[in-house]
Image 1 (cartoon, chains in turn red, green):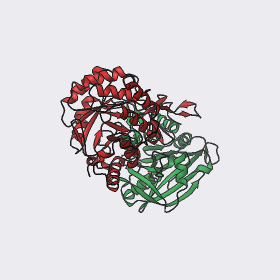
Image 2: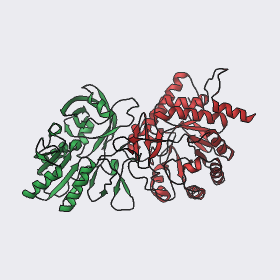
Image 3: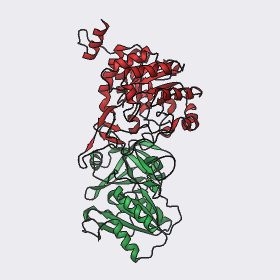
Image 4: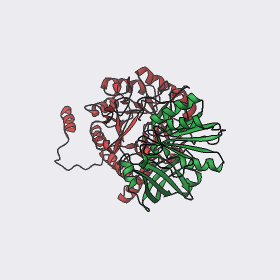
Length: 320
Length: 262
């Protein structure tokens, strides 16, 4: 039974990655799981300079989910290369470095710096963080900005280039299309949804930044619909993200069109969750007689005559 | 040290004070390695709500069993209160650093507020094994909320005066120290942030060594979510993580702000 997948120049042993910002730099979770059993590790976002992150309170649990406002706290590019990358490159799995920046120039500068380092299979470009004042979501909610960044980075690397998209837009498919047009190898979606929680005793927002990013099982149905929408618009692979907690969730994402998945918030609950999901997917394939897990990608059956969702129909009309 | 991420069996669960419970579970490997001040993250059920684990201090160790003390706060603790012998809970740990019980001092002065009493029975036992004198100052809302199990030389203060000193635990401590000779005290404090802040100020004013065991919102407990920052007084990094760099901090290391929960 084949679970492997080649994405651009990167070869994944299975379809399960751990999502950026939910697995640190690999070393923290190492005692709790078998890192080699992961398809890949997407690092905590790396910015040019270290970022201290937002003031507390940074997280709040919500029904079947959580809000976070970490603010891209990270060690910065120098410390990442000196202190984090040596550990990561020794792990027998693919390393995808997530890059966050405030300007197109900063994205380029970080990528060019990383190009000189071995042991990196891919870049995931964060144009969708809702928790920083500048950059982040500002890029991800403008198609022209997403295009510019994709184009500028594409011409500077042979490594696999993945753009991570935000759901906080009207038509995520437009953004996916932009990435495809500019040569991205894949898109990853969804990042967190902007959300909020209020303490009714203090009458204050729970998070120090008022709003944060919602993740966890609560957003899984939204993520599935976004992946489905994007899959109808593009032919490059989609990495599905959003509330994946069990192997059943992961299979759902493959069926609606994701070629791989990322496990995020579930790792907070159980640092071994992603490995358990990868194993569960294999068992499912054996039980179902699936010889190549690729056969599940986009294998959703929609009965003839079923009205397509509005957003899909709208795109079909555009094509006419 | 070997890490534990598994389901364990609850062996007993009893109410020990108003809305306060002592739950024991069987885990020889945790019992065998747990040091005073460390904590575990507990998952109360397989359901996705509550989604995240919550941190609990290990209160005491009894052979192959560990005990936690908790009071009813939210969904998780209400579910935990319904656990009976034979039920299972998920534990992840041991997590965090330890109290500085090996440092050089004369008397351990424990300052606990409310359910902040939780880590101290285990610390008390280890201190007593080392023949270090222990004084305990325990603050509670009222007499019904006082939990003294496993503690030594306890001085109680209650907000309403229904037991012991009528006032805050810091006031009780100050009054005691003004009338007694205490050899080279080292304060070990755990409780609401407002109490920790007061303890910190008191210790600095008197020049006492002091460490604070912090509570924080926390998603993972192992340093991957970055959700539990506490501001540091100095150094390049503005924040430390309560889960991996704490929960025990020297009182000079950290700064409390108004926005921290009381």
